[in-house]
Length: 335
Image (cartoon, rainbow, N blue to C red; front, side):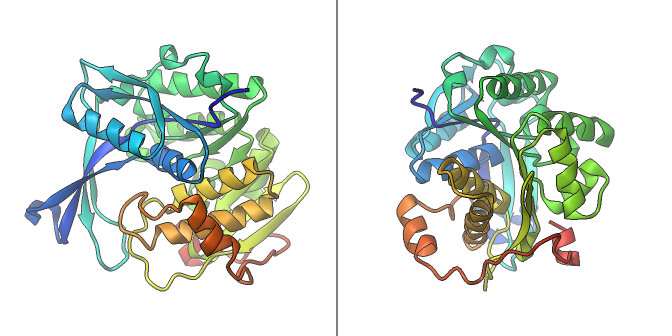
C-alpha cells in the first residue's frame, strides 16, 4: 500500500503581503508568506492528518528555499519538488483590505520554474498515491504543464485512484477564453469529483442553473459535482442524489482568498473518510467559512483537533438538505 494518501501539484509562489491598507504603490512594509491554491489544499489536508506529497518546481533562489521550507513545516512531502537553476520562483504582492473585499494581487510568475513542469516530472512513486487533487492552474501556466496535468490525471484514473478537480480559473493566464473552456473541461472529464464555483460553472458549461451545470459534468464522466454558492452554501449532485447544503453564517469576513481551497479540503477529506457527499459538503462549507475569518490564504485551515472540537461537536442545525436547485441570488452568482 502507498505511503502517500494524497498527491497535489502546481505552483506555490512567495507572497509579499501588505501590512497596511491602501494602494500597493504606497505601502512600505510587507511580510512574507506563500501562496498557491494547489498547495493551500495540500496544507489543509496535511493539517487533518493525511500524508500529502507535493509535486512542483522552484527556482534555485531564496524564495524557492522559503517556499519549500514552509511546506515542509506544514508536513508536506517535498521530496518530489525539483530545483530549477535556469528559471526563478514566482512571487506576488497582495494588498491588505480590512472591509472584507477581495484584495488587490499582482503576479510575477511568467517563465517561472513551475511553468516548466512536464511529463518528465511524474514518477512511479507519485502514481501510487491513493488520491490526486488537481486544479486548472497548472495547465494554464504552459503547454508542458498542461500536458503533465492531462497525463497525471489520466494515469491516476486508469490506475483506479480517485481524482478531484477544482477549475480555479485564471483567465489572464490563457491565450483565449475559448481555449481555457476547452482545456479545463477536457481535464474535468477525467475527475471523479468536480468542484466549480457557480460563475465558473456557468462560463464553462453555458448553463445557468446549478443542477444543469452538475448534469453537464456527470454526463462527461464525473461521479459527483459540488457547486460553490458563496455565503449561500453549495449545491451537490451525484448519479443518485442531489441537494443543497446551507452555508455557515460568518459575522466578520476578513479575507476571502482561499475560501474555495478550504471547501476542497473539506470535500476531499470527508470523502476519503467514506462520508456521504452531503456530509462532505457540510464539512466543506464549514472549513470555507473558517478560511474567510482569517487573514491569509491558508492560515484559517483547521487542524484535526480543531475540526473535531469546532465542527464535529458543534450544532449542525444550520446545514439542511434541499431537493433540487437552491434559489440563486446575486451574491451567489458572483461566486
